[in-house]
Image 1 (tube, rainbow, N blue to C red):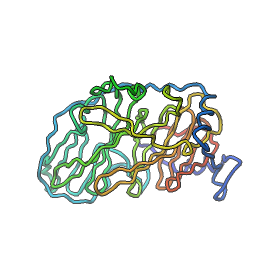
Image 2: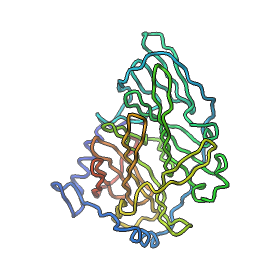
Image 3: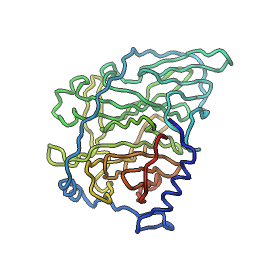
Image 4: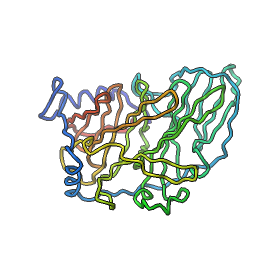
Length: 340
């Protein structure tokens, strides 16, 4: 799953050998242009075949919610994940916070003190879902840690099957899923729940790549979403931030990005998808403030994250999202990386 020998070298060779005509920054590649306004994006989408916006079903395993007390905290994180890039932490199901190992398993977080060598002691456990109503139709895949804060990333497959959502007037929301980020603090060996963030999305799951990264204290993840026009009002189907109540009812708050945050593709896609780079500022209080830039392209994709860039392969191009500026450069390539 993590066989990446010479991968970074392959990136450099591919993009150096095959760049598009327009270039900047010493010939790094062709800079893409964003759509100018919502009307421009709508007009473009009207010329494309509609993409499938169904998502595969799935269901997380339920569990009761209990919190334990025990070992003293330490806001340091030893790197125990086999990462691809130094300075880029990747999602995993086992992480370290001070003298504790954290384990994500079947919808629950476990804290195990390893302060005494050879004598591990479980000190805490908590259900990831914020309520019993939200404990179905979801799968939690990975987590990241920053000091004593724990970020659990999951995908909610079936909003229609959660609580009264099936009766929602927003039928399009009921058909889609959501990427969610649940935030906890490990304190005295126990978990304190800080909050949850939900973003309408396709399933990000890949058998050979984790979705989330922690880069310089910021959460970075890739998120696909089918590009089409909503039935209600003909608006672009830009993924929306969602709010969830304890009864499982979801409400759409507003779009994650605007039309002028979407970059034009080099060629018309056959199955249009918004490929979004989402970056989130992480507050000490557990707040998660997310923004995104998106590339309109075909459904085929693979991605790789460095400390400064996210590289997205799709068809015959690799797209370079610069994390700091969120601008996108395009390079023509042959082939696609396999099995990161």
